[in-house]
Amino acid sequence: MRSARRLPVLGLHRQRGIALIMVLWLSILLAVLVASFSIAARIETLQARNLLDSVRARYAAEAGLHLAVYQLRMPDPLQRWAGDGRSYQFDLEGTQIDIQVIDESGKVDINAADLPTLLSLFQQAGREQADAEILTSRVMDWRDADELVTEPGGAEKDDYEAVDLAYGPRNQPFQTVDEVQQVLGMDYDTYLELEPLVTIYSGRTEPNWALAPPEVLHAFLQADPAAIDQFIELRETSPPGTPLVLPDGRPALAQGGGLTYTVRSLATLPSGASATLEATIRLGTGSIGARPFRIVRWRDNPES
Picture 1 (spheres, one colour):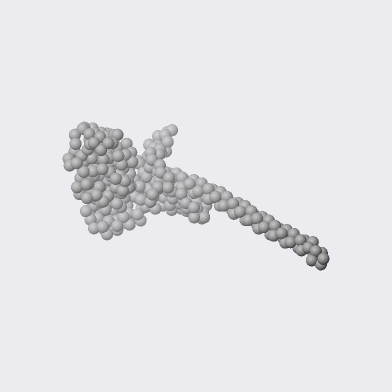
Picture 2: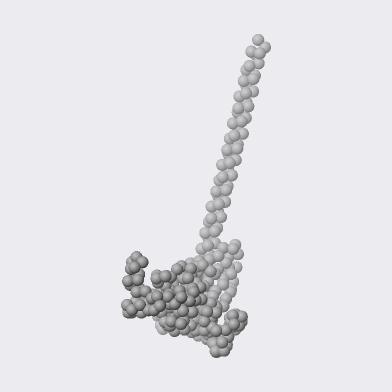
């Protein structure tokens, strides 16, 4: 009898325990939902902030490009920016912008360079003597108008067909620097070494040594590497138009040599977000109604 009277009390305690457990589980579930919502909201906020920073950095880098064009068009050659790769830095409302200008006349023109120049170019890119000679011949066969194979190791249409390529040499000048990758035997690693050293815009048989990139100077000047480095350092710290002497004794003038330049602009925000653009531009002639410049090549966030 006594045990029968206690059953309802025990059942009530059991129900209260179950209810407490359910409340605890609901509290945990609610806490998880709130935490998940908070994390999702924070992630979305960070993504929006990162997107905004990337857009701001991109437009700041473009501002650097337009500043470079303005400076390159300065009438006074002593105030005009030098196209020798030196760094020009300035602050734009807290955003640090670093600009480099390379005059294309300081590079090797893949359409105009002679055999010895091309041979030295491929050797600088890491190819052995025999391979460098073959690639030199094949570049000549790509750009010349005839179907005669240049020795040693040149390649015309039949040679491309023999390795199942659906194209042959253009038998015309290269239209872009990227086209060099299509030359038979050219691998991507070699192209990456060549790409910053070559151009199609100067028309010169040899580079303008006063404005040549360091890699070009080291590849072609017969001088001590340390002396070349000293020349580069002196060039970058000298005002435009300063007469200089190359390490091999020839005179050089660190002043613009053409109308085509590659501008590299890096913008870094206080948050650390950054954007880099690289544009090859050709300056206008300055006639009434003419554009101040036109873009002939554009790359976003190029490899360093």
